[in-house]
Amino acid sequence: MSKKHVWSGVKKGFATAIAACFAILFLLPIILTITNSFMSATELSANYGPVFATTSTGGKVYISEKVNLKFIPDMVSFSQYITVLFKSPDYLLKFWNSVILVVPIVVFQLLVASLASYGFARYRGRIREIIFFSYIILMLMPYQVTLVPNYLVSDWFGLLDTRWAIWLPGIFSPFAVFMLTKFMRRIPTSVIEAAQIDGAGEMQIFRKICMPLCKGALCSVAILVFIDYWNMVEQPLILLSDSEVHPLSVFLSKINEGEIGLAFAVATIYMVPSLLIFLYGEEYLVDGITYQGGIKG
Image 1 (cartoon, rainbow, N blue to C red):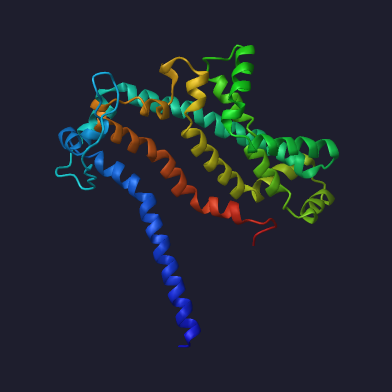
Image 2: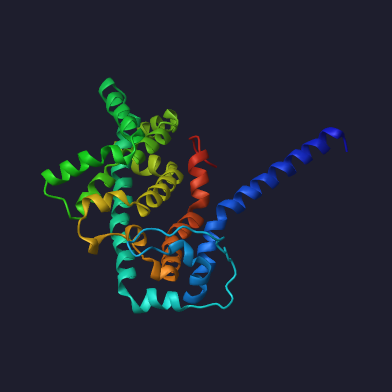
């Protein structure tokens, strides 16, 4: 074996080792959350009590000793999950609040974005390019910048303290339109022209050519949009004053120091939908990102 091949193998091994170290570092908080959710309240208090301790005035206590990060519980306990799933309905209520807020946004944002993207991809013009450029500008703005205008518009339409204040800005978010437009513009013009020669109308081209070819892109956008809105905090805090309709992402931050174990258990349950969707759609996500257009054999 030549020195070139040996050196190439060493570089690949070194790069793999570095990537593995970073992967472990990124996974440690998730592993810590899952394993700690099976600890008893006594063990959690002994390990992390100083972190969550407060003074008589509600301030934080200075941590003068090292915190014991423990990954393996001394004795596995399911008491936290029993409390969350059976004894306390608040947690499941907030979980379903998250589902009710996020699922309509994902479904209807894809529907609106698919139709809008088809129009941007099929028809070019100065006005359409200006509108599309506006979409890009809006997408580059963080949500905190548009939060005040969203609040004022929701107040003007009388949508404050209703789920529509969350749904409507999410459904018409520019992210999906931008992504799908870029994918549809990669579809070869010859494919669409061949369909037109065969007598296909615009809706047939949209349903039978663009949508099947953009399946990977649709799945990629759906995963990214779901994860983004599943973790939203600012929108419900500002637009929904009734805590009964707040999602679990907001409720997690309000679990007090006496419920450390419940916080770990609820956080673990909260991660399950995102992990399942990512694992199920990983292939579509990669395919959607790398797909360059054309017809696959």
